[in-house]
Image (cartoon, rainbow, N blue to C red):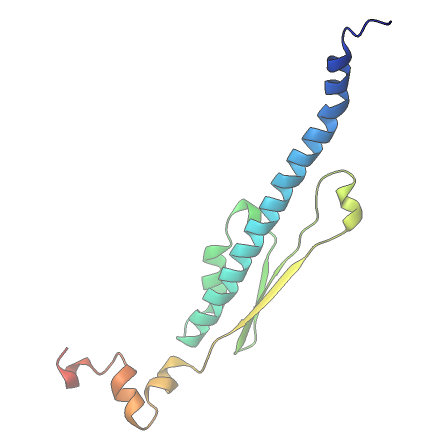
Amino acid sequence: MRRRDGQSTVELVMMIPVIFGLLFAVVEIALWLGGTHFTTYAAFAGARAQQVGRDPMDATAALLDGRGTRGQSTSADGQTVTVQMPWEFDLPFVSAIGSVDYDVSATAGPDEFRYERTSGNRSSRYGDNNCPKRGC
């Protein structure tokens, strides 16, 4: 019978690249998921800013100023705000997947100043500029 001294060491050395590969893949996917979260929220914030009459580019730029959100671009057409996040995995062998860009668009409702001045009872109930009439 042969001696088995060092067998566990050899097995560990063979598994270390696999373990580190999985660890780095999990970190890379977590970074991508975080980027998609910030991109989605930035599109929503830009659409909301556009709805209340503010600049959607300023709203999205305020949210997308971190390291994980450096490459995003924002476009607004007056009604819809689109944020694009380019992404390529930096790991070996995973780069074969290619780019996993993430684009999200958000559309808010009508402008708030038009919404509050609609005829009927809705303006008096939901408009925040009606406090002096109701005594809030």
